[in-house]
Image (cartoon, rainbow, N blue to C red; front, top):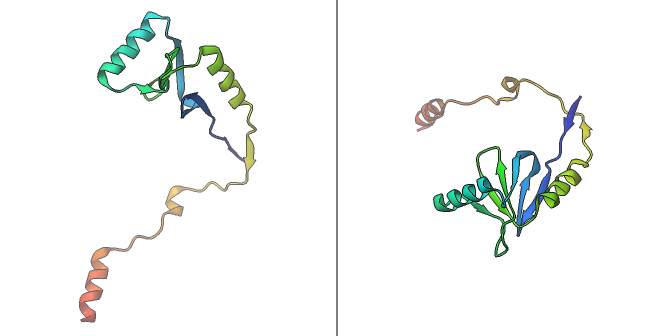
Length: 120
């Protein structure tokens, strides 16, 4: 039996939601490492700013290396992650087959071109 796991998005700022399962760490902005990380990301122009005009309170690191700044505290973000984890995981009746069986037959474009030439 296969299980359908719902995506667990949480709000981390103004008009910004991320998948909670992609978070690797959450750091308080009071730590030197978080301030240095946010400064470096701003200089590289790769920071995802979730704060809008609010002051950043946390730096969120994702599994793909992205950094998101958030105006929420660590406790607020952790409670949102916990609430997202309480979503029910529903079993589904999905039939798993090999990918080769699902691939459609691909026609050769040269065969179609030859057929068009003979019709003229």
